[in-house]
Length: 423
Image 1: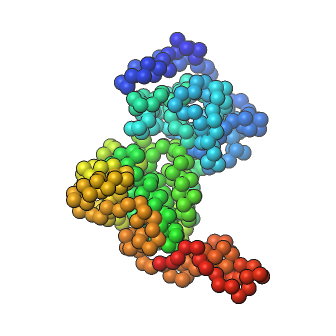
Image 2: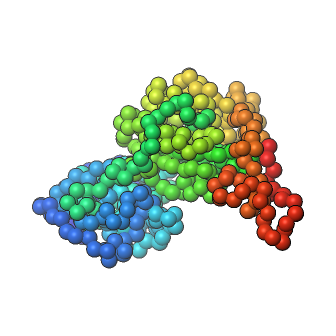
Image 3: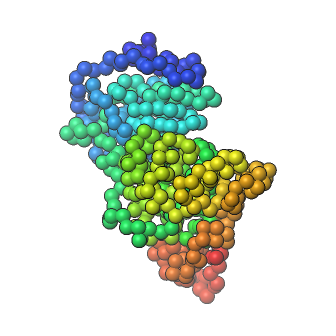
């Protein structure tokens, strides 16, 4: 027995990889209570990345008692024991250290991560786990044998509005200006992979860098996964014009969601990006091609209608060949293979001898002189990108400075030299 009145955490402390036995029922409060949340309470709490769309002004009360939380419900919790997650990613992207006693604001969610945890939304507000540093709470069901169990947290209650209604991420999802119109959608390329950490994000990142340097306006969306800002901020830092993910569509994680919901997420994110005056959209589907939800999603006509071409990421030639073959069986056009295998010249040679598509190193994908041709994009025109008089670099016109303007009075008449050459 532990201090919370049950053995919910005990089965995870031995380090075995088998699924733990079902925890005993947690004997919490028998009556629902609604208590006010003060500004001081909220100021003390570390708000996680997954909750970034929820304004702090909406967090007015704390709901506790016999409640079954839902995916996306916001919860105020106290850190009880530090295990695998030693930090939490804040709304601004900074990773803050955690210590026992810290208050955190996270969202409930299920998780599927072969390198870390399998987790599910619990049936009550009893002791649970922080299963993702981006701010996802759930009961750990299994873990990778190479890591520690998840950090233990104690929910204090669901965060609610003034009327005691729990706040859910879905209530604060991105709002669309117009309904989806496929005629306005720019070319859309989806990156798939063999598994978690196969190089999907690295592949997307390299393409963002190359496209941005070449003067294209790029939008990026991660349509499935577990809420975390790592990939999100990398795309922002690499110059993506607009970056969104499933948390912007109102979900802390997508594991266990009905396929219809994931289709809706994809439509919502692609529609949002299509309204941002972009030249190309890059999507990423988390985990591996053979993850159960991914196989179902790729087989839907809705998803097929949104994707023009596929880029595949793999850790070895065999995985790349099998994945490309399966994607083509679904009817997708695969245009290239990249990913973790490109770190090895030997694996590159193996893949080139096996797969029916070119194998690209990340240096090729990030090269502004190559990426347009790789993706069969039309050349950037002067109207799309010009030399900015403010910075001397290729400019998308967002800074408001006139193209070709003088950098300052002292440089009057001087030649403006772009830092990155146009294609």
